[in-house]
Amino acid sequence: ILRSMPPAMTIETFLKKLGTDDAGLSREIAVDMALSKLFMTLQKEQKKLDDATLRKVYEEHKAEFKAPELASASHILFKLEAGASQAEVDAAKKKAEEVRAQVQGKDKATFAKLALEKSEDPSAKQNKGDLGKFPRGAMVKAFEDAAFTLKEGEISEVIRSDFGVHVIRGGGVTPP
Image 1 (cartoon, rainbow, N blue to C red):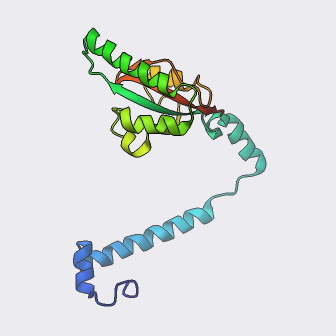
Image 2: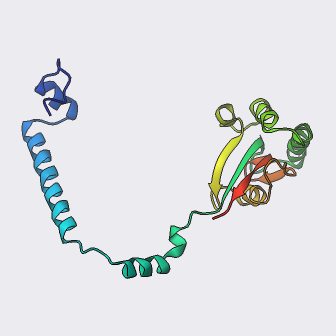
Image 3: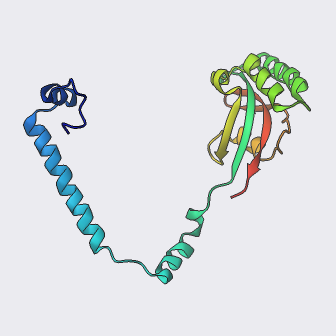
C-alpha cells in the first residue's frame, strides 16, 4: 500500500481519503485475505467437468449461448406529448414527411446532418440520430417493428410512437 501511494502523501492522509483508520484498514485487509483464501480453496475443490458434461449443459441451454438478433437504426424525432391534439399530430407528421422527402435516397451523412438540425431527440446533438445496435425489446414496439424490417439505408414511412413521430433510416439487421 505504501509503495502505491504518491510520494508526498502520508499514511494518515491516505486513510482519511479512504474514510477509515488503522483498525478499519486492518479489518478490510483481513477480510480480503480470507476471501482470497476461500476462493482459492473452492477453486481447488471444484471438480473439472468432462467434455460430455459440458456438451450436455450446452445442449440444454443452447439459446442462452446465442447472441440476439440486433437491428441498427438512426432516427429523426418530432416529439408529441401523450395527449397531443389531432392538429399537433398532423403538424408533427407534416414536418416528418418533409424531412423524409429530404433524406429519401440520400446517404447516411445527409441523414445525420438533418438529424442534428431537425431532430427533437436530445441525444441527436451527440449521436446525430444514430441509435447503434439494439435487440428486440429495447425500443418501443412501433419503432422496433420498423427498425427490424428496414434494410440498410432504407427510409421508413413516418412512424408514430409514444415519443412522437419518427423518420427511421435502417442500418440493417444482424441475425442471431
